[in-house]
Length: 263
Image 1 (cartoon, rainbow, N blue to C red):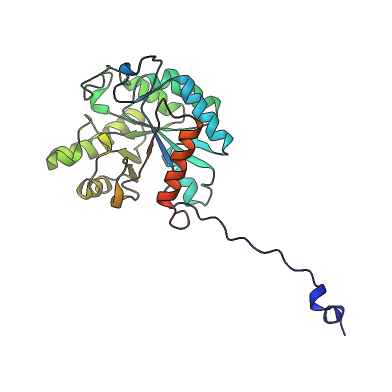
Image 2: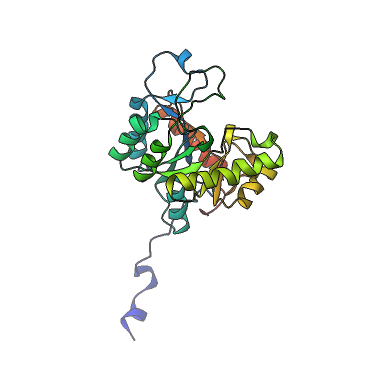
């Protein structure tokens, strides 16, 4: 009789119970920023689009403390496709404000993060005229956009002129999507993978047009049932978002999108 058969079953080592792996959200967590600049009075930021460099640094430190690192959406998507997306969060900066190079870029480099900057090639070097209450904020020039790309950031399109694409005629929709994609390619030498819907507004027609224009993905804000590669939801980050608020926002994202394994 072998030693195995002579050993009472009760004496055999019991393999440890395998805990069920935690489910990952199908939709990645992507944070939405706009401008990074100094300000003291909330009246200076009526649309809540500005965070100070100090607030951004604190938010990046919070991510690090949670075992998370901010990356561009393209990097995030590639990592998830390869099964390496754990611990990564998307960082996006809408509108292409000129202050990105002065205030956001140094902090991203310091904390070994990347980000996606969605630019408006039809408004190079102008300002955010679409925000009637102001304040006026200068946008990146062509040279600024090339600087962002050379720093290893993803440059995506935000359209040409920052228009609500759900309310424009078909020819304008094509120009805002395909035309802006070509304009970004001419600026950076790389055809952009990503598109960001101005105002975050999207419907099925616009999302299908983004796919037809050749983009690999598109981001919105809260697209509801349209959520998917061409309507990725994002979490707005404001000056007021300290550790507690960020934790709540992360938990809300997990609760909303915990529907099986990452995909």
